[in-house]
Image (cartoon, rainbow, N blue to C red; front, top):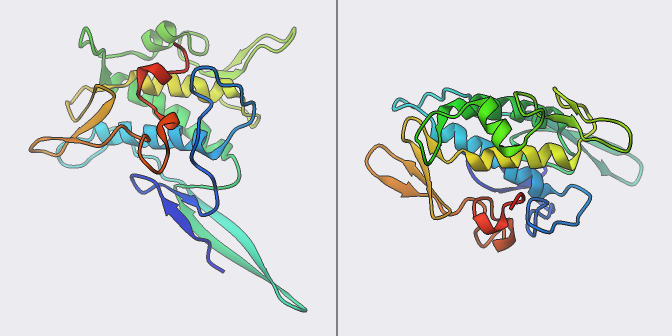
Length: 228
């Protein structure tokens, strides 16, 4: 039995039945302790969008767009038997947190930083500069691996298989700072994303703030940024 999906954006999809609406953990005043699919959607789609934003005129992406193929398994139960089904899906949000995907996205985000400019000075951003300004990770080049808990100090580096809220929030903060592509293919004005199509700026909506997601899922609106 084939699994059905709902399309999101840029070829990303979510399994039918998953709730991807409502407030994320990134809004001001968040009290939710567990992760929800909409949290992962924000990070994954925003990373892909920024890869698209730095494409060259011939469609080459200096930082490869995310692409994750996963095998999903389901069973069909009959009166006396069980039939197993395997289905390959690409860039699909499922009922499980994909730690390998999150770890790979962290690498892409760091690779994207020097491809974007400071929206005030127009200088190229640096990983160290962004991490230090936003208070991300060790303030130099590593995301937080695990936050300080009790007497245990924070650790930094490659993401472990234990995912913390801090991990996603740091990724979110860095992505939100990448608003002006160095090659002029992407810009953010008034909270709306614009992509250059070779002829004109094409508004792409305000990322995830449309009827399907609800206003609380805003990624770019400054009033909803987690750290303000």
